[in-house]
Image 1: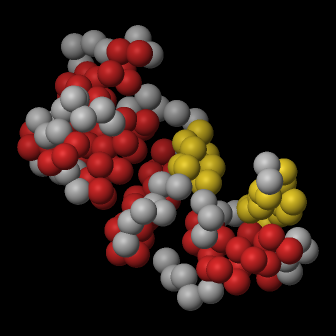
Image 2: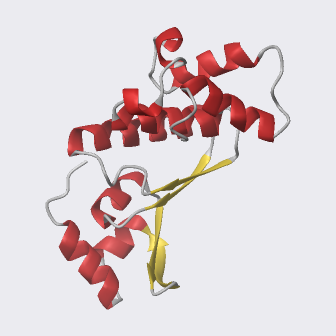
Length: 160
């Protein structure tokens, strides 16, 4: 999100780029912010990025994507920079939205322990190539590739 844009302007930009901005957009933006658990919409729409916490910024980014009503949401390292409590809240929000909206989600992450908790299937990439792919429980319980084993060892103790 550009530091020059308020939350409202950033979300409006997404709508404008896709030709979806109209008279009902302000209400749609407030609804989207409420949906990502930023309930005081009038407060948040006026804020600039430096006035928000990391978790709030991530929720704005999610609202910005969801307002376009995607069928697929790609969450690329969407929680890796947060402390565990914020990570859990963001992942729970994403999973709740997935269930409520029927959105497919592709999580890109390095923490295979977290991936196991939020994914039906896991594909492990190493040097740009898929080296292992399958149901999450099978990939974790019976890893075949050395890189998968390294990721599992690195994630030991990770709880979501």
